[in-house]
Length: 219
Image 1 (cartoon, rainbow, N blue to C red):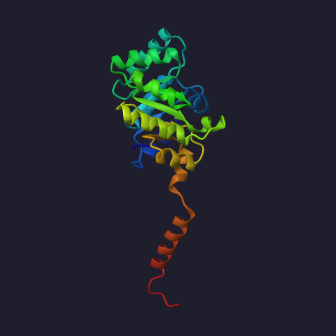
Image 2 (image 1 turned 90 degrees about the horizontal axis):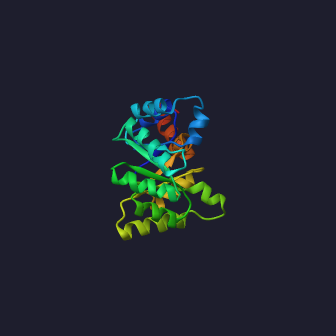
Image 3 (image 1 turned 45 degrees about the horizontal axis):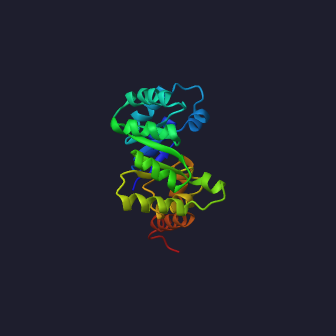
């Protein structure tokens, strides 16, 4: 099991990696457009690499097979050991994943909403298959069976792909992903910070600290 952070903010990524609980980073065009619309993508990703460890997913934005492979080559060159090419699910995408896999390039097939999509991506050689929890729910479906069925099929057939579950909106999404067999929840900083906190934990710590501060005092 592992947790990735879903962010493109180097400062926040550095801070959260200091917890010692993270194993990688995922980014996407929407996140980067919101957090740093004027940033140079290459420089931004290199900053992220400098303050983190593990795989860093960078998503392709072109749409033809030729363009996607050329774009992937640029991203991969930034750090061949750590860059993971994030490939949107499509017929072109599967071809790209297949070709990148043959070259030893790590891939993350993204925007998956169903087990059958994840299965195809795994057969093509994807390092990771990314199921979008919140967007599956937006369609009116329960995402838990999707995650569980994907894990069952991958394990049964001995496929090496790891399941990432993203598009997390609540702590419960993270819990359910882990319970259903996801290998890697990828979580936004606000949700990760919420996972630390519990009101009963806070009151218990305060009770213990107060007892220590007031030890020996007469009542």
